[in-house]
Structure formats: structure tokens, C-alpha cells
Image 1: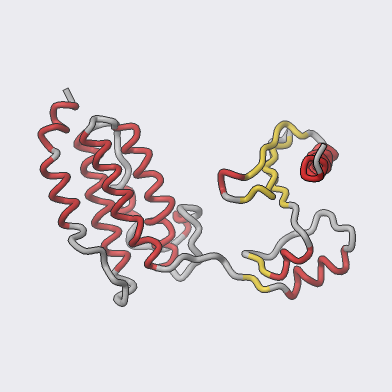
Image 2: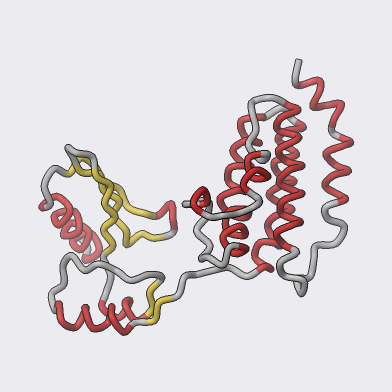
Length: 217
């Protein structure tokens, strides 16, 4: 057994030592392999256990609750005085990706792969529209989490990005994503915008309409 395997064995033993563990897996899908995502019950309870070194606490994305530490006083001190900053992304990050992701959704629509297109629209809300709506509200970028709690004029517009398994519905949702993104990126006037967008994408969607109609039969 390697040192890494032995370390993770201790992690699992820690999770199993808490009562009523039903299942768990590590957090690579969210870019955090140090995270063990657990489900306990009954009653059902979702618990994220993150195992870090003391030095990792000098920079935090949010204040942490300490469940276990070999040197509790030292860890508590680092948690209390560590820098806390949410990893908000700059406008350039969104602009570099938004049009490529929306074009991907449009190509799947043109091929009649509606489930794939709908999935991309959900991904786009999570990665782009949600964070930018949080930014507009002066909050940290947290995907679409708790958007319903924010007092935003754009709530109704965001619902128009939800699509049914229908060609016209998916097309309209892509157009709604374009419109809402263009509005949200205007919050940063200094942003260098992608050349020819959104006109080029709208033209692509328009030229693809005959194929889309064929797939809807």
C-alpha cells in the first residue's frame, strides 16, 4: 500500500466512524480530490468532509468548521486569521468560453441532438449566467445556487433559457442565453468583446433552421 493509499484509507475510516454512513465518493468532478462527499442516514444528511493540511488554511474560500485536528489550537488560529476570498472569475474568463459553449449547443440542435443541447444550456446557466447574475447582485459567483433568493429583475429572463425537448424550444432558449449574456457582460464596459459575436452565432442558428425542422419530424 502506497503512502497515498494509506492516507485515503484513514480518510475513509474517519467517515465510517461517524454514525450511519450510507455512501461516499471523492470530489474530482468539482476539481477537489481532497473532498469526500458523504450521505448519512436515517435521517438523510449530506456531509462534505474536506481533509487539508494546516498550511492550506492560510487561504480559504469561506470560513471552515473544524471537525478534527491533531493540533486544534493551531488549526483554529489559522482558520481565524487566514485570508478568505471566494474564487470569483474575471469577465475575460466568461467571454473566452461563452460563445464556444453556445455554438456547441447550436451545433447539437442542428443535428437533432436535443438532449445534448439542453444539457449544454444547463451547463451554460451554471458556468456563465448564474455567476454573472450573482455578480450583478454584488454576491460571490456561486453558479445557480440560491439565485431564487436574490432580488433580480432577470429572474423571468433566466427562465426563458429553460428548454423543452422540442426544436423550437431549444432554439429559443439558445437565443435567450445569447440575449441575457450580452446584457450581463455589459456590466464590465472595459471588456474586450469577441469579434463578430453574437451576430455570427445568430447567423449560424438562422442558416441551420432547415436542418432543425427536418429533425423535428
